Length: 88
Image (cartoon, rainbow, N blue to C red; front, side, top):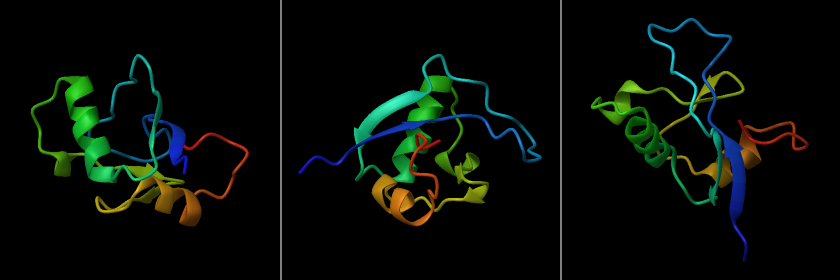
């Protein structure tokens, strides 16, 4: 079974945030759909060279906050409504 997903990590351009995430050099990723949001937060902290706790980052999909325990496959099936576009 191939559970690989392509997705992008992009700063939120619509919301009001205290501190905006800088863009990543390579925001496109391919990984297992079983990957959970908490692991994505840890990856972001590492790539951005931050020492903050993962709870300091908020991950959104279509403007909605996503819980740390959710997998990419679950997000794709329940929150991503435009299946023609890459998951961002």
